[in-house]
Length: 611
Image (cartoon, rainbow, N blue to C red; front, side):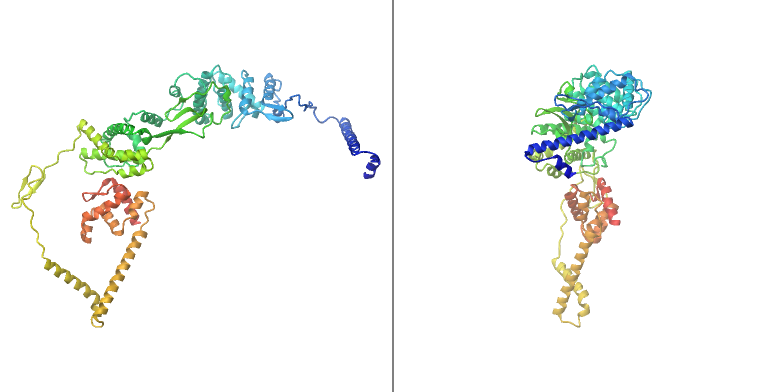
């Protein structure tokens, strides 16, 4: 082969360009021979390849490629139906062949072009072909699927919503969102509601996306009426939380106790004071209290609704017409509007934006308000036990919020709620019941005398004399007894100095051992990790004796335990209340008894001690 090539190419007296031209001529001749031979073989054996139209790649011309015709075979039964040719023509609008490269149009543009082309098409296909496409477009459906869809759409336009696959329902919704086959934006909005109402039984997906689509469609088009009135016709009613938040943001604080209890750090529903009889009192007292607080914070440039509800913020994840192909150029134009108490459409830097309500109430603040109201009502109704609200929790929650912290730190704020609730109780005639007169026993008789208030005051206090000499003698005898118990064994064997040294050493060792044992017992004997954080910290801060006292309080033997230990019950109770106030924000013991509100929490601590 190389020798023949050398014979045919003579380089003598030829330039480089002449040699290249000669090589190209030989190659073209060879290719033409191969092609001619192949054509002759096909003619001899019979044509096996169907003829195809030649495609021109001339830059001055634009030729269209029909990919869908290759992907889906034509229907063998109704291939001659007029709609088949219409569908084939429709497919050509879905893609463009330009300068030799495939330039596919976006789905939003394609679905509008093809939808407008097929807007008046009706069909009566005798089969129902399944379709499972998540986001259907015309080009993704086969001929049989398209004919199934157009047949279903024909029935829908006649008012017959036959059960069909989700994909066909969604494709029809895409048409309505793009205002294809409708008379106006209002007509499209009404048809979308009708589809939702009649198809949600077999297409539950509509319940998730249709509220979003209708809100966006309302904001981008001119629809008559307020959205709240239109929303009343939806198959799914508006949530009650939206209504409550709307009323609170507008300053309507009546009948809001249920909402406040759901956003409070204080469990008012679990209080022993809360019942069917006291709930109306708490409801009305909360309304007047919030009204007064609203005025108080408004004077200081603070919105009370942001403290008990939250505020609206820009939703950066929002995109118009979620999961739908919609050409926004076909819309009437975006306009700012409020579609609910929690959602508002507006313009930010010239771009459409959706602001959503972010529910972020100050739970400690609401808990303080409810506990303050309950504290006053307990006193005014003569309830046996009282509660004390802790303002420090609110101040901790307002830390780094200069305006809020300053408003809550003023003396007027701490006195506001009790003053308002007491004034309201005066107007309603709510007063504590009259106390029974206490009877005092006379000093010289066994009879009782009734005093105007609390009995006659004693004329003089009895004089108590202490014999210091007797006290010193008692201390001396106690020390001698203790020393005798320790050194009795070594009395005859060791001198007094060594006995004194051994005594001190033994006492120190015993004390250190007992202290270490108590420390280990306090920190490792009980596991309180399952308790809530505040109660866990409270339980872990108590030593063994305090925990035993807490247990005795629950069964009514606390005073007896204190007598056995030789301590005053009031002192022990005060230490427990100090620890409780530090960790849970309230006292546990009142009048020598455990406050019933916290009986359940104390029972959990005791349960962990018994495990």
